[in-house]
Length: 279
Image (cartoon, rainbow, N blue to C red; front, side):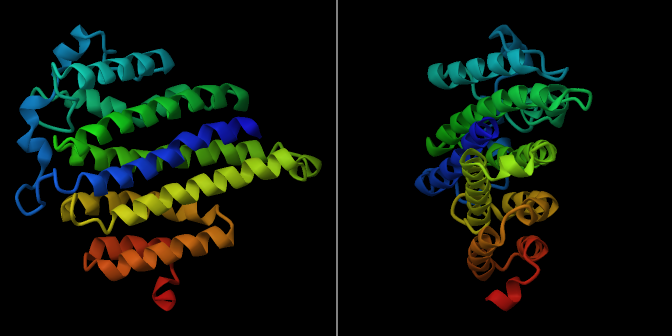
């Protein structure tokens, strides 16, 4: 059980970081009323695919394995440290959009954890993938805090976080089918499962909180995140114990009361069918 316990911790910490970065960077980022998309405003800052490859970045035209992902984070960290290029952007010509698309590609997950692989063969690469993704989030969060925008990219990274968590939970559910009743009663198993539930709850709580953050992200950006949450959130929440579900619903009530955005409200109601009664 300690294996999947180690896997989940980085993602839980990531969302805490994202929420913190959003609030700390509020004064430095452009107002949602002033710009529709910071990727459009800052396109010239994005590294091109040619520059990316020249910096020893992996080719974004094919899925990345563990070695390619490790090279990618090394290049991203170097870019951020030296300032010679902008980080890969979500859109715009010459922005490295192909690189960013590969960073959040489900094809990477599929390559790392093919159906033909055993559970043990999936867990190791998945753990490494989650660690690298955490490092990527941290670099982009730091850039956002520095007033460089990247809010579009952060929304996409948070949406991909939900995708990664959903994939992780599917692997975990497969693992749980192999656990005997005797193993479920061990301290290590119970501790590990609590860690997973704590981590997932913390992660979802962070995203629910971001959905009411009007100071950093535009309504259009929050709606994109809400769409991902509506698609993937309900199944993740359903996998939690009731006490965790209630904890999340309490946070969702606060977000619902703080927003008049129909899409955000719809996403919250889909995830928490009893939310109106809980208000």
